[in-house]
Length: 378
Image (cartoon, rainbow, N blue to C red):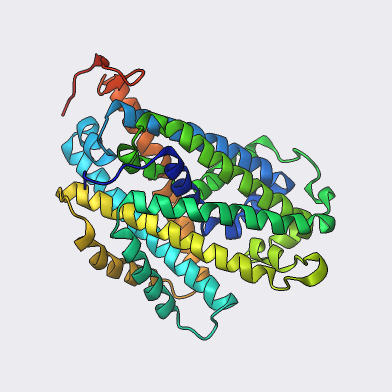
């Protein structure tokens, strides 16, 4: 898997934006208002800043251990048994993430578009289409992201501009009325909406300029944070804090309420739905590729294509486990807390701090020769 075409910083930005704006944005306005009321958008901002800081730490690991993913340097820093255990956990984490993405997309599509289509058919079709993209390399996914990202960033913002006359910004008051204790407690919930950024642990070695990873991640996460903030502000301004907490998918409901002047486009939410489906397809494909990458690094294969289809069947069966949408979101909440937070935030920090304490890794400055080569442990 080391003979992949290198990706550019712009492609990494596109990949990360595609990855992060997925199923989480559907329920985000409700989640943050439950935690912080009208200050929910401030919670999103704080969460974005935290995730940017963690992504910079992860990028430092990529520089300390060039041409290695977390699968390799995790075993070096933590010891081989712990490193393998950590990598297996990462693999399980990505597989479960894929199953949730596929099932949520199926449920939303079934309720809003294809009410007669069985959930099994939607999930199966999505996974089969994803296998085609995942069998390629990361650069192919990056090029696709570069084409798609401008569409699902610009078009929704244009539609939101039509909703400005119907917004009541007094719904965002009182400003900073949330207690510090409640606000800090809400941070644990909001940061899970940014899960996916940790794939940098696997993708940085594939960059043609790995040292630009921190800058690229900051741009991508900045775009995602602004998108989340606008979605929350618009939703709360239109529905209010209490009404929004009664909606299953407040973001979609908001777009259904938008009326375009002149009525040249009556079905706004249909367009948004189509864009969102493509976005989630990209999210699923990238997580799928991350799972295949971890597996390939663990078993040390150079060609990952033959592992894609068997893994798709595993994801399919996991996606069909929840009985209904209520159980699905209950499982998703538990997944975010018990797997998302450790693998997205805690473990990368543990590896970085341990590597620093043990004085491991190699750092370069200015792209020149090594200025400092430090011992490696086992």
